[in-house]
Length: 368
Figure 1: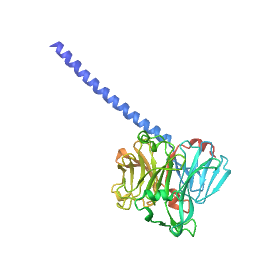
Figure 2: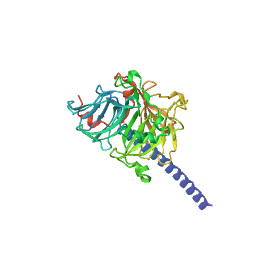
Figure 3: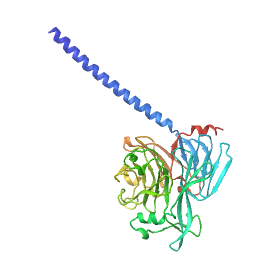
Figure 4: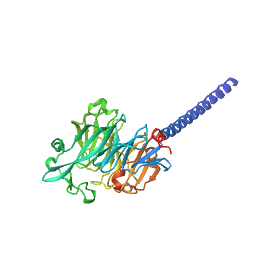
């Protein structure tokens, strides 16, 4: 009887010990997750809109009156307005200027040594003067390294869309025209990125790091261009993976091998979403929409950035403009928001996106 009591007590003690260990282990996991979250948040303490840098409390840290900027750790930067791109050293002296129309984005290559710009060239097409996109990669001295011309590749592009030669030209509103005599547009590219390492490239080399991902909103095409910007390696029409929609912005490759897409929508559904598209299967998944969906309907522009597994940073130009940090693990809860006051006359077109970076090294050279 005594030995039985001892055995029961020991078993009871063992059970309690196991429970406490499990609780303690769960506590450690939660603590680690919280610390990891805080660490990730601290890694990206700066928000860039136009050429303004804000901290996560919304305090303005640095500012330049331009539409788009990209920053380097040595204190230099490249800045662009609607009609030029220029390079400024850490002393804010202009080292070079290139007169050319710029639109939508200004990005850096994966290794941060090259500058990606979307510009425009004008040609007669279908008996009209028409604006065509031209994608350029510049070095930090302003030298043109390579380019892709939508005009030079117009036949190949038209062959990719079902309507082919019947693809309509887009009538440009008079207020938005860069040239008064050019009232029509052919392609309307709105995002241009160099792809980094990603899982899709394991199964299809088309998606290798170093190739370029481009979205053309008027042609309704997502394109992959080769590393030299000479060939179209892959394409898909918007309507295939996104259910008949043809209004997308800011298409970018993620390390998981899926495209992250700002889907403005409006053709079929009158609300916007953030989607993932698997380029290997064309399977599309909505990863964020408002509740009710109509609360988020960005009819123009829009940018998105994946901060970590659970969080997305998105801009909403139409309804604000606002920027939000969305937590997908909390059913799309807005855990951070920021309203921005326009500086540039072009307004919505100049703040297509908000991006979050760690610009501490750049700011060290501009700590006045």
